[in-house]
Image (tube, rainbow, N blue to C red; front, side, top):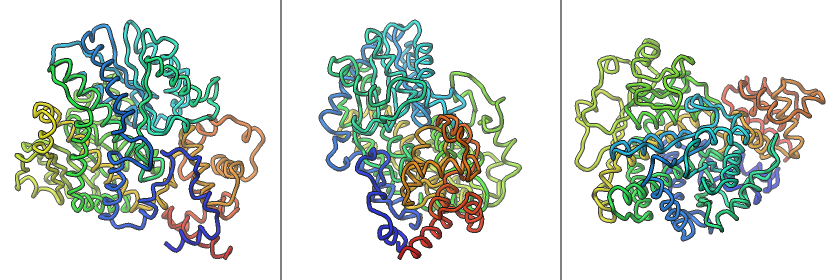
Length: 599
């Protein structure tokens, strides 16, 4: 792009990327110009980035490195010990945002398997912000290590042995830091595991409000705990995200793959007496990835349909059963904080509602429409309002899917995502009810060459979930690209809803301006407080107060960015954005003007 080249002429290269930037916050060189790509090219670029999960990135230790594999095997041994006596122990997954949602679905899966074995369920999940955060962002709680410690203590009361896995992709969440610290104070009970995707020295080293440690200091303590054999750091490097900092994508996929690899291996060892090589199981996910992206033409068609919906001011709805529906709900919940989407733009529904969604707090549909999640809720709340540009995406791995008459007669766009194996084919008469079908064939026979067939067949559902995740991430990301929410693979309309995103917003402003960090922070505060004359108490306020003010607002970062580039008042920046309607067009036009003036 001419704009990208002229920017390098005007601004130093160091501002476009930083050697000190954590890997999870770096820009992925594969997707630098993804916002000008066609849907098919978007999918191809996402495939290239997802391949880095398995192929590694740069010279860093990846998922198949000796250190990571040894760590995985040692965690399996701890897990197996607890599974042999699940009544007295607990396995706890904890995280914020996407990490907490993946903690929930992993808990649901493996508790279900324990019940089938006639054993007491011992898996538990913690998500910062409680069960509301499974649906809508409650990210301010991420910044509270004391609350994290308190919840972990309550969750594990009465348990004599606990395997704790704290998931924070960027090694940055204070909520998880507080829990790790609590575990290290009591290693007789807890075995702490930190799961993330940066090197240890890239853990966040910024002060945490109302606490006396940084995340880096906690990680350094965990390194000593690991040397004593009482804790683990599981941090394979998988490279930057396709959309900068969007850890819901590669990091989320790698999180799911690693957790399932650990606990499938542990369950198979304890309950089947079989040994599964973890590298072989991880490679089976690579086969799923390859099989999913073989359908890139059809996935691209869904991106085009989804983009049409969003650009028409309409919505995308995922409908399904059980865990595939939950993957849809997870993808939908990630769109507001990632793209500045509304809670209505992308939503997920599960057929039996909370009966298939066993959360800690039970049925919370009374909290409002965005917590009404059953198919009957969809039929009552959404179906009567659908227009021709809305999009329904049905998710299934069942060839006996029943398409009800209401869905058949709906005049909106309709798509089907079917995940089957070599022996299964969706009937033509069912496919004919949809405008587009994505048929993914899981390579079960190929997997069984390196894994026992009992293992591959027994985990078909996990493979289907992973395939659906890759497809839905492609659809929602591609649709928002088509809507103009991404500029040069940067989330320029990110919600400033927690500490991490506050600092990311400052970084975005600095990336495209010639200003210092302090000046960029000032422009961000001007946008948050709607003023060019900040008061002393506003400037001096803790970041938590800025976040509380910013979270409910729209276009905070775009306004600050345009104001910083043009060095203009906030109101002028707002008028520039209003003139262009599409955020990325406004930013592109503004940068081009500055570049032209400078030249």
